[in-house]
Length: 94
Image 1 (cartoon, one colour):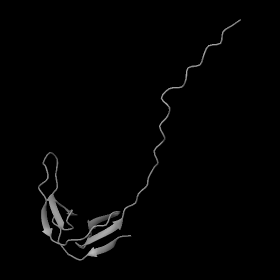
Image 2 (cartoon, one colour):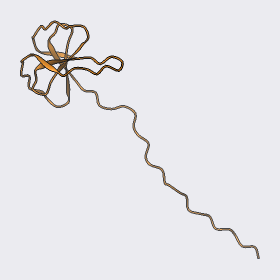
Image 3 (tube, one colour):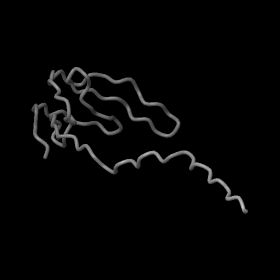
Image 4 (spheres, one colour):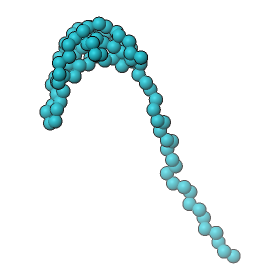
């Protein structure tokens, strides 16, 4: 369940990626398309949200900063198998 952290109300422009940067502010960068590279990020709004570990921060539909608890888990990895079986000795006939 996501909860609203800060009310900002920014208007999103098409063709730009909006995100919460390391300082807790909202930044945007031009999206890359085909072989065109994306642009350098620029600050849109100074908010200064303090981020907690284990939470994902994002810009919601209303242009506000929201956060949701990260889900950890998934498929467990198989344990490593032994590389080679010991060679069996041939029986001698009498």
